Length: 305
Image (cartoon, rainbow, N blue to C red; front, side, top):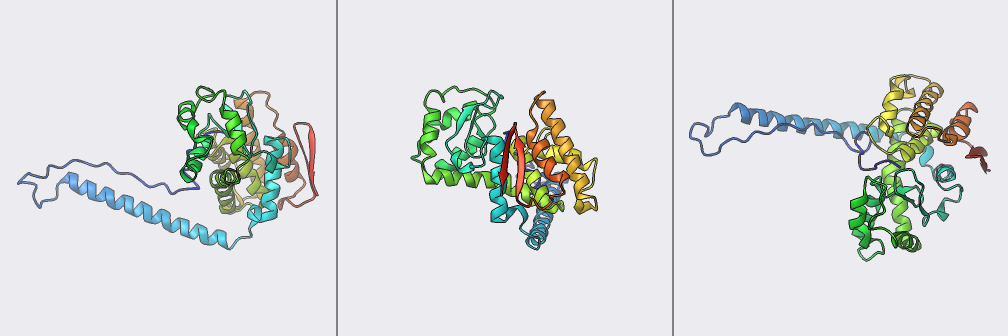
């Protein structure tokens, strides 16, 4: 997984920031007289306040819109299905609850990959998970590794983690509170922002899953390789249903863009999660992600009745 520290578009409003000037406070000439700098500061403050108000109003309008829509992928049965499909790619099993304690270095440059969604020591999301968990449970078995996790963040290094971190992760994964923490972080960083934005784009249950899986694999980043960057590329080539476009055509374009990004980053990569899963569902016209469902992942066949 890529960095999970950037959640700029769907998760939080972007607020304009102004330039502040330092104005001497003891000048007789300036006492009670607005200067150009103080006027600029006042305008900047007003602009920021206006931007914040607009962002909050837009979010409230979006919330109202989403509240009137069908639950889609957020419905309990569909959310469970989504975790099963993602787990078939991340952990080679649809039994995703068996993966809390998984941890290994896949040799992909992201350090250790662990847990139900593939949190990585090199991509910030594992660090954030342990930090948030430690705030609520200070005496947990992973807390002692926080300094090392901060040092290796953004790299594939194991310095300070070996030899005990993997065993500590597996032991902590037996604790119900840590399992809950993994699920909550999965939802906060990946599932909820992806489903929310997909609904705002007018996408149905399959489209919401397409966004979610892309968010998991590419990370919630705004750069060209991150989820939001890929979405921007797709929007440049096709209209979303929310813009009056065809849902099938837009999803086909998004999957094309995503597959190109996967192959550009890792030439020769197996793109099963796109080709023999999501694109198969799309070609079948299964926009509701209805079961029974059959797909292939890395040569293995999975099904949900």
